[in-house]
Image (tube, rainbow over all chains, first blue to last red; front, side, top):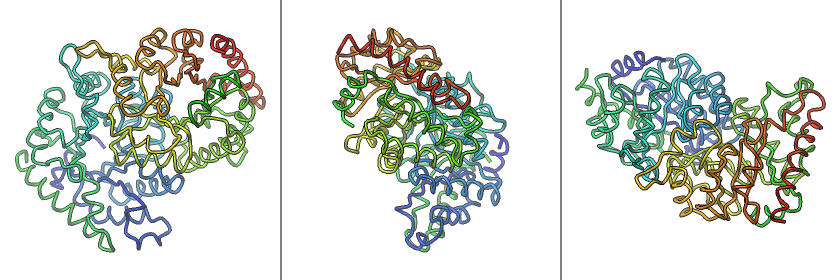
Length: 274
Length: 274
């Protein structure tokens, strides 16, 4: 999916919501455990209930890998299902990979040739040749970690160099030599508040993938106030707040209700640019 | 495996070699493609041929994930096989993971509860709460990226802060608040030469996992000269240089020959401390 298609979807659906498929077998409703593939059954329920309210889905690889072979099967089925039933969805493999060139190339092969997702989250620590192999596929995206939503983001990402540039700012600046805003996005946590102002000074036109609204306590209003561009420029993710909104057989309708509430808040925010 | 057991294995085998199982289905000998599980068949051949010459095996997750379900099956079989046949081997899942707490906890579950490896490589960019969940299992290790072997290591890892501390040095210093040298190791590329001197000033007693000897051009002599401690303190990895030493039906004996050459060089280096 290219940038304009994503922008069109956001305007049409009045939503820039990404539903995070952090599907934990230990947290899904009991009645699904009788299914042949409980994780896929749960995802299918969530996806069918929310597809008209969001523009993206973000399966978190950790939650599938921890089930080994079964987890990979559930992940593959989930991505195929979204592709077939909801082709307008932007699919993000939240993997936070990054390794030496030949290894990153293997990861890229997994995600873009086999799984066929639109984007992969990548960690910048190892630099250019750990990131560029993910850029070798047409129409796909790298979403690079910049300023994350967790407490640990303060440990290294905010370190100032001699010129006063913080590490996350250096990542934003330097990585623009590798790809433009038509191929690269950045992860910026919703919990970072006014830092969005500083980020927009370095990457005024890039889309930002914003986790941390909901369970992690970030504010949608604040994110939009400081981070939104004329093209929206934001994909805001919510995982636990939506997929675990309901604990029982009503899990899908409860997820829809939770997603609808976020979508309405987003429509409100989009009035500024639409 | 604890630190003393690892040191004992190194002294007994006169080797601190880790064989990297970067098994690329596109590079293994043709005759193995007829096997039910060619990747496992290749790994088994390599392992049986090298187990007495090395102290560790390091499957690189990228090479298994890119085969989807089949890849995970091959990985699980490989780890189980090493555990059963060669219980004195230190098994490293080279995954370079790192995410917010609840996600890192899921990755940790995969590697330590299910796969049952001894160690996982972790990326430090997201800070403390992305690393500590990997420390929640007895007798297991985190191997944190510090100064990697690739060209991109210069992009961010060498950035100096206002006090003149480079990012990789801050990672080494800060992470010692999370675990000691009995639970944590660091990845330092063999291509970094004299930087090992600076690294030993910050982590004099920690084991270092050193990739980059062989295909990437690092020098074993230089690594030992600047990085070796009285307990060795080094696990030096070679992947392509050993597992692809032979291209045909002799791949295992060729790998053994290549591993033997490295082991003899290591025995020479160990004379200093034994």
